[in-house]
Amino acid sequence: MNIKDLELFITVAKLGSFSKAAKSLDTRRAHVSRRIAELEQQLGAPLFTRTTRVMALTTSGKRYLAQITPLVSQLNHAGEVFKHRHDDIQGKLRIGLQPFVDKLMDKHIAHFVHAYPQVQLEVFIVPGQHQDIKRLHLDCMINAGEVSKGNIAKQKLMTFERKMYASSVYLEKSSVIETIDDLHYHSLLGFRDAEGTLEHQWRFQQTNVSANYKVICSDYNSLYHFCLGGAGITLLPQVIALDAVENQQLINVLPELSAGFTDINILTPNDTPLSPVAKAFVEHLTDTISINGTANHSDRSVCDIALP
Image (cartoon, rainbow, N blue to C red; front, side, top):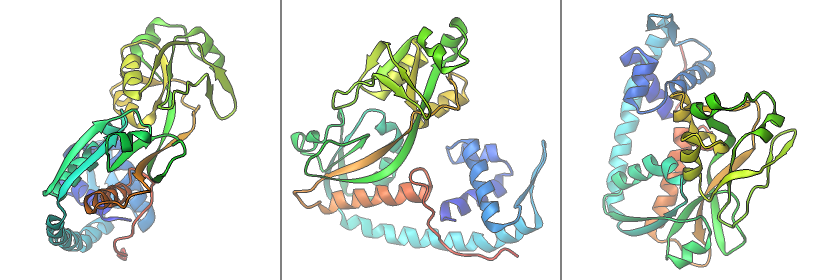
């Protein structure tokens, strides 16, 4: 378990609702529900009683809340004291973000800006080729997918899964999709990566589909908006489609199929040492993404508290 899960539990207990807690923390209700369920599984006891109308703490939940509230407060206070040391880090930082990656990193970068008030940040939206690091004199770059060989160090930040999506508008006007073979009768939207490679086939767990595209885009933002507008079916990172799916604007077509997983990496030059600002930025992203559980799903244990 980590401190974010404990804070999440405290928020749910205070507000008495997964939905209210999700709104307060600017996240999805499903994420809150999943994290609480995992916390209960780790502790081996239910923390809440749930009915269709009321949600309340169990006896164990009340005792656990009383135990962890002062501990979480102390940990957060220690973190605030540590943050003052960030004032020693100052200077300029130039980073490159691949289109759509900016949407995944925005909150983490905003948190870095807040934590390091003496740093001036300059952000470039780049195609994703590692050559952009030298061309634009970047300290680092965040990109999705494979990286061609070069004098580049890479560190994984998170992994996303690609699935098939279409807008409800498109599906209402099109023939029914019951099997993967039905895709041959639909408008498909394709992706060309930063190296210029076009996916001529959609590769799934058990089969491949040859793709005859109506639209080809070089970034996922464009694919997302064309798909949302009803242009056809495409493969999208699940993480950027979630909100539209929850709002029923996009539909996960044949949800049992997956087009595999892709890493998002932070790239830095190997031939020059990182500046103190760049090193702080890399460490901030790898630490906060891991702790928040939005990336590599590694759990950082904060403290072991026995449940009465």
